[in-house]
Length: 225
Image (cartoon, rainbow, N blue to C red; front, top):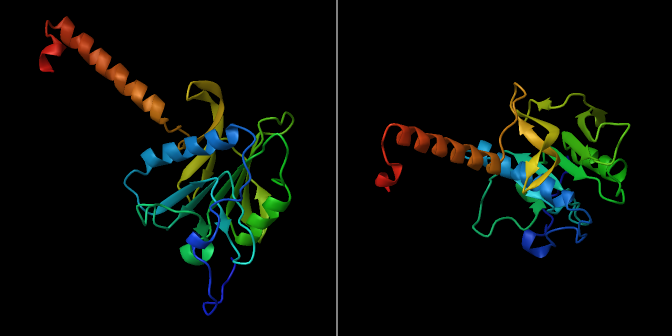
């Protein structure tokens, strides 16, 4: 982990850009991390000690530009510390290196397997996930674990991440009306957590079955409105 001299005057989030100013060139770079965030917001609804950033700048050195993963997860930090929320993620203010960084490979590779991978390792990010949907001979999702300052490829789909208490994996599903392969969170038994859309549909189905049951008993459910 990078160390900072407390005697130096370090910039605050208000002094710095909130991203790396590089626009995404693929919808998946935006949708995939947002889906992971939405699931986390339900699974960890009662927890306030985590933060998941989407295309947000991580400042690891006050003299260098930020790196902005498509998504990253930090544990042991305040989820919300101000009503205006975070502008960016400064390691010298958070005092926590993200535990997971996610990169979704776009139309043109941007150092996901080289420069970014090396930098995340230097930062001390424990898990580094790269999703490349165009891969055919290798798995589209690769998850690396930092071992002795080097990333080692892990196996398993979903892959259990004990330090996080969740597994991450890929499977086909529907999100925002789009049916394709998505990334999801799973429990230790490999059961996938539902998306907000799936939970809403499940609740709707239960309500419909209850209404049908009441009508079969001669009870008008509309009388309760």
